[in-house]
Length: 131
Image (cartoon, rainbow, N blue to C red; front, top):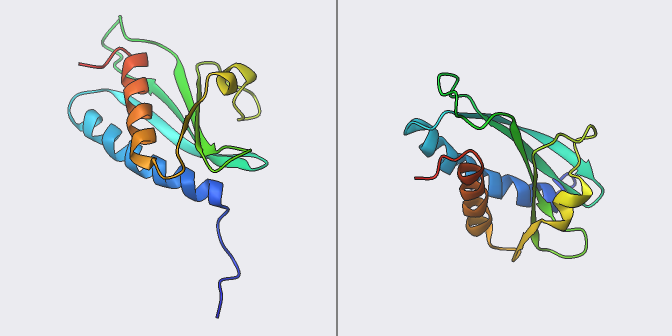
C-alpha cells in the first residue's frame, strides 16, 4: 500500500538542514554562547520550509550585537538546490525580502551538512561570536 499523505519535499529539505544546524548551534550554546531563537514554518509556493529567528541574549554584555538575524532554508523554486536566505530586518509576512534572495547562498541538493555549517558560521560571525 502506498503513502497518501506526505510532507512537501522543500519542507523535508529544510528539516534536514535545520536538524544538523540546530545540533551544532546547541553545542555552541552549551559551550558559552548566549544565543536564543525559534524555528517557524514559512510558505512561498515551492519555497517552503522553516525559518529561524535568532538573537544574542548576553544581556550583561553591553557590546553584544543587538537585534535579530532571520534565516530561511528551503528548496530553490527553479531547481532542487538548497536555498539559504538571511536578513536582519523582519519582513511582516515571514518571507525573505528581495535583497536576501539576491544574496542567497545555494547548495547542491544533497549538501545538507555544508548548508548547515554555512548557517552556523554566518550566525556566529553576525553576532561576533566566532572564536
